Length: 234
Image 1 (cartoon, rainbow, N blue to C red):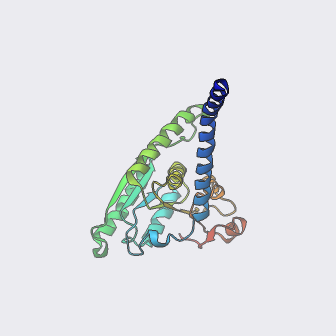
Image 2: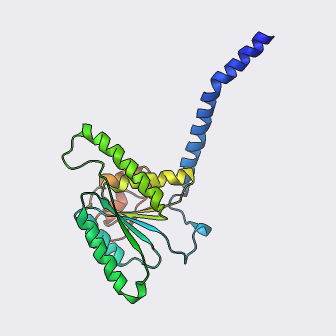
Image 3: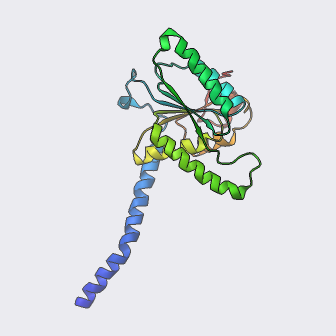
């Protein structure tokens, strides 16, 4: 009898880690599916219509920043505040353009007192960098993105295509799953994308990470039906 009891206890002990792992994976997958289901739906009572929303704005080199600045010009500044601008560590020009925009807003009487911060993030991979060395730089970039997201904890993430938005959006989605913060992710595909999405856009669309996905060409909306056609924003 003692041997049988001992055998049963030993069996139970050996199966306990597996049971806990299965339970954890089940709960995590349930949370992921729940977040995907709720993604894109109205926030309801969670956010007051008058309450300011901390907003993370991801900038990219070249035309990405020009498009984002045009988008920000029509944004309700008093609603989306404070604003946190993030660009790649090697992209100083984008942050300078954002600073010029914020200075012009500060000079206007209706936006006095609004705050903005400017930050940089490591790139996962530089142009021409080998894939072997990019493994390390990607891990560093993810760790840096995690630190920034913990620091900012934005309610809104606004991006339009630069690769630097991917780790930030993935971490924002993870925060939703574990219940740290619900960040609504708004992705606006670049006007340069006429027939197909950029790699960043395709990842956020296929993985259902973005709450709202906007395109600027009608043929893109027909190809990707969950996207919203908003016309040309430039």
